[in-house]
Amino acid sequence: MDSKYSFAAAEPAARLDKFVAERCAELSRTHAQELIGQGHIMVNGQPARASQRLNAGDRVSVSILPTAPSQVLPEAMPLTVIYEDEDLIVVDKPAGITAHPSPGHPSHTLLNAILAHFPDLPEGSDRLRPGIVHRLDKDTSGLMLVAKKRQSLAHLSDQFKSRSVSKVYLVLVKGHLSPEKGAILAPIGRDTRHRQRMAVATGGREARTDYRVVKYLDDYSLLEVMPETGRTHQIRVHFAAIGYPVVGDTTYGVASAKLARQFVHAHRLGFRLPGSGKQVEFTSPLPPDLEQALEDMG
Image 1 (tube, rainbow, N blue to C red):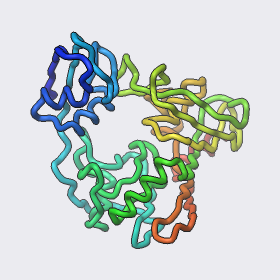
Image 2 (image 1 turned 30 degrees about the horizontal axis):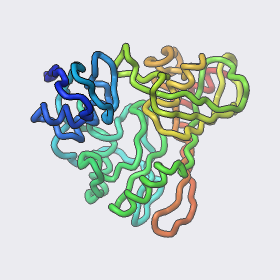
Image 3 (image 1 turned 180 degrees about the vertical axis):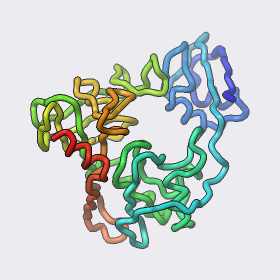
Image 4 (image 1 turned 30 degrees about the vertical axis):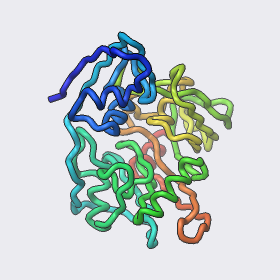
């Protein structure tokens, strides 16, 4: 069961995350920040940021979801490793599996499978996500990078923060996208009407998605998409916002009779190896379900 609380701020200028952690004994400040980011902590009925300063009389509502497991256990599951060295592994994630445990997905995740093969992954700021450098949505397939050492975790995370990592996704959208090459610049934040969704929103976090059309198929466009930022659901939100929803995306677009999940595949990933500094790039071909969808669409 969820735990729900509501507080009135008595003193102005307090940070939201600190205010909540001081009043909910079961929450650490880090956990409070996660709940704020997920839209489960609201100020006066509106999504907020952890750093938001409260005004006297502000009403803060908190919904605490069931917690994830206290530790991540290895599970014998199929795992496709396309590269490994002493610092990292690159895995090819199938669709339909979450990247790591979370409330609602306590096990049977990609991380559970990875730990069965690599049990000594380093813990970063979150002990329930050892080795995890970045994530893919549950129904997005393709390349993910996992660190094997604490130093390489920090090195790779810094590359993502500095936006020096090259990420290319193959995405199918509805309609003939024009112009054939461009960029979508629109801030993304929590949807005020649906807390589990994201939206293009004034006051949201900066987000940029570059793209180019690979080819047109009937009333569809196959794209190479290069997200410069890494906001939650960024690709799906951005293309839905400009009127070209991702095929098979039932959250931001429409269902497809030809595809059981969203057509988003992490196709190429380029970065510098922590040990040598050498620039490398890895490629994952389209999985069979996406290949079949393209054939069906001509």
